[in-house]
Length: 501
Image (cartoon, rainbow, N blue to C red; front, side, top):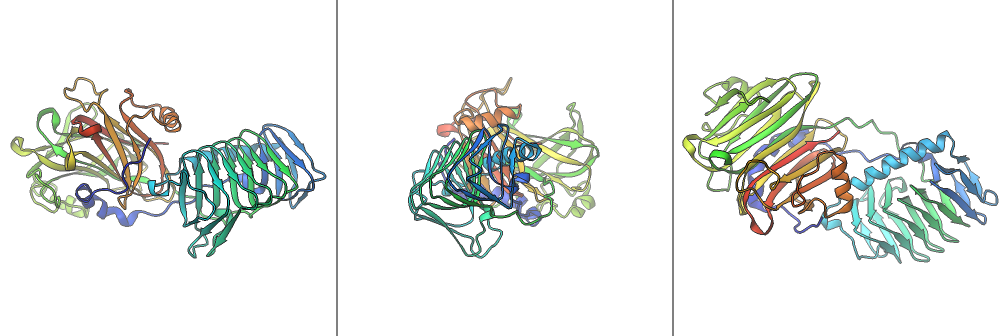
């Protein structure tokens, strides 16, 4: 899993901007992940908690699934208690495990990759930062909230975090220790005499060397927490916030160079839930700005799960004009196509082609017109011919009508497509946010061990090692997935976006 570019080139952005502009106002920011009941614990180990010397701990100290806590006294606990694998410790460990996974899944933009950089001396704005392997701090790390008391800082570390003696963390401009998280893949070691601020979420163990002072939490997922004459103060419980409401896929769309025969655009979507959903499907061509050659006269067909034709449309004003206008997202060119339909939960296919066998760049889209119904758009799956330059395959999607971050699986499929000639032999996949910033890139889905495990856990990994996939937890927003061929390869491919449970 590598990152190669930092922004979406202007030519690629034009085609999807039409769809994204319509629903951008529905998008809201996601809420921070919660530590749940682990918030009451200042120290929480998995195997043991061991203390040497007169450590001062403000808050609960616990261990689970282990049961050994030693060194209290001489260690002193204030405003808290010992919890040796009791019900409170078990629940706290379970909540911490959930939070650890959630923080590890947050997307860190390539520009925030700090691999090889010492944290000491840096001043970081709010955001998610990443070290691919280990991280170290030998000076002062400054976290600047920019006068936002709710600003969150997440630093993901692939393996170990080690701070030098007398290193420190400083918070400025209303930064809050409750909103600072260091998520380490293995262990954390705080150097002697260091002053640290933040929640330390270690995949294995945490060691605080003699004389360390911490405002935050020491949480170890599978190993021990080891203390030696330390002062550890809970940053306090998070401010109460409304429970995040689930976000939904409000729009899914794909832009590509529409050809003929098997190489027309074939877009599948699934409605899940307990109620019918009203949607609009659009076939766009002439109104796409800044690209050539465009699909001059798009034709659209909507098919059911059996393949039977439900309805079709050539020019959107020919039929359903009033319904399409009422949707507020009617096409802007009379030659473009649109279909409004109320569909029961099932799988559907929209086929976009050119009238009389014409070809060109087109956009096939599905919009949710009834987000309040007890059903949702669950995924997008579009097949077409991937070329190069502006003629790669671009899948766009919008999460909205909710505040929670959502899990998504994106796949770029080629070699495993059955019965198709001239498949894309080695697909690559890029995920961008609404600002055109590259969030993640993948060539072969098994290259990154952590991503490969997460992809396999979905139950629908790609069937060929050369195919691409990305699993991410995304806040409500606008996103773009681009499938292209490695080293300029071309061929038939499938881009898919799954909204995971």
